[in-house]
Amino acid sequence: MLLKLDRTLAQNYKSTSQQIRVMSETWLLQNAYCVKCGNVLTKTPNNTKVEDFYCSNCSEQFELKTGKYIGKQITDGAYYTMIEKIQDNSIPNFFFLNYSLEDYHIPNLMVIPKHYLTQDLIIKRKPLSENAKRAGWIGCNINISNIPESGKLYIIKNGTVVQKNKILTDFNKMLFLRKESEYSRGWLIDIIKCIESLNKKSLSLEEIYSFENYLKEKHPLNNNIRPKIRQQLQLLRDKGYIRFIGKGQYEIL
Image 1 (cartoon, rainbow, N blue to C red):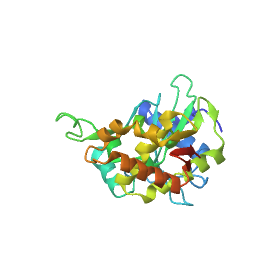
Image 2 (tube, one colour; image 1 turned 135 degrees about the horizontal axis):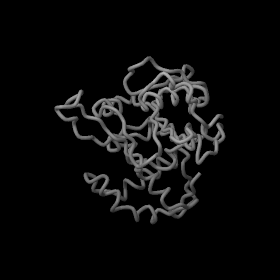
Image 3 (cartoon, rainbow, N blue to C red; image 1 turned 45 degrees about the horizontal axis):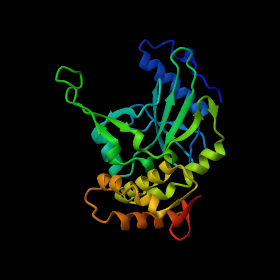
Image 4 (cartoon, rainbow, N blue to C red; image 1 turned 45 degrees about the vertical axis):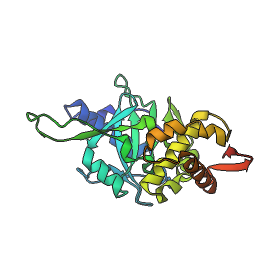
């Protein structure tokens, strides 16, 4: 995998944004792959809303975002379009490509699977001013800081390419989240984030109970947080994410 954008592709474009778009899209087509089945990607027709690429083998859709670094929030397109896509489950998976403007080197390429995206992660931006070309248009940011680490799949991390088989395995083992409603997914993802924050291979029910206040703040309408925690742990156990080993103890698989 060549970890550098081809600058010769941008010679006929004046704006930096156009140059980066052409270089990054071409690079992705030549080097990346569908993280569900491993097939090559195909470019969607220009001006397609939200998604940029798709897999002709399994029909997964992808959108590419590029930047000099991957921060806590990623600037995206129209706010209401994103919300509608999440509601009807047609939101794509996201590639986040990090590049150096000095030598166009690519240190990071991260994928966020669509099943980790919920409405609370989509931050509405202020409408464009009345003097703007698209006056009143409302964009959005994606708050990726609230996504668990298991939902941030690095194909390239700090200049090192991660094995393809690992990416495919990590993506597919969490596909069970797609079968859940957005409400249920939100709960499962929050519990996964709590589990990950412990940074341990095994955990106890009491340790997850310690996140009760945090979960109450995330889900203020739920007055039975502890029973809900137990329910979500049972679901994660049934899906093979954790294993119950007895006496309130769990092992992360």
